[in-house]
Image (cartoon, rainbow, N blue to C red):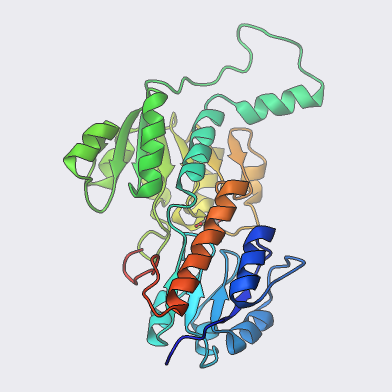
Length: 329
Ligand code: 8YV
């Protein structure tokens, strides 16, 4: 079947104006002007008539929805890098291409990971709250002490683009970088990053002071950090997650933090987002952000550019540059 010249493209959430403008020029596109998260029936109506669906992390593109897709649906061009909300096997079964936006948000995400790595041990959010509350009594030698970041051991789970960008920054903060990944990096890259590979995740957890989660969320990595693994981190250790909430068993994390078996956590993502675990809300040693990592004007434009390029290249009859292959995530 030849590709349509101006594919009928349905975008599930409000995108930056410049991105929507360009999409409107190139495609027969429709948008979500008031940016409400689409209900299941709306998504079903969208996949019934679109050639291309442009979803985001807030849409559950599961097997049922994909099965309900009309014969026109040929492409899911995700606005975002993570694709754990899309059933890739179901899409492949229906011969529907899936693309994402890798690289567009790498550096912004790594910046936010560093912000969390600094914020939690140095008690940034607590200090800010204190000043705003009006009850700050002034400097004192013993008040609001946190823990030193420089010289500590940082463990990174997932040494893809974002993990490596975190490692590059971590060197500047004098952190000693360790990592766990399915495969080690080439020696030259390891040396450049000053990173030590741990084939065994548990060995790494037992050794580090700060953990940064930077791997994709998949069936394999769901609850990778369960109660047992969290227990391998000591009571002095901090956990930072800007990947996906489901990689950590959030209830087990709350248990460990409440019991003082972990020193603190910085979470940009939440297992049941937008619901945040109420027990975490009550803890001062936890910094909670609303999935901010890629929320820069520049990053969101770059993501839009990638979505447009993927659709355009496909519509021209070529393989889109960011096709997600099942088994890669
Ligand atoms: C995106 C993200 O903004 O790209 C990702 O995987 O986690 C985000 O920061 C979001 O997924 C948009 O769909």
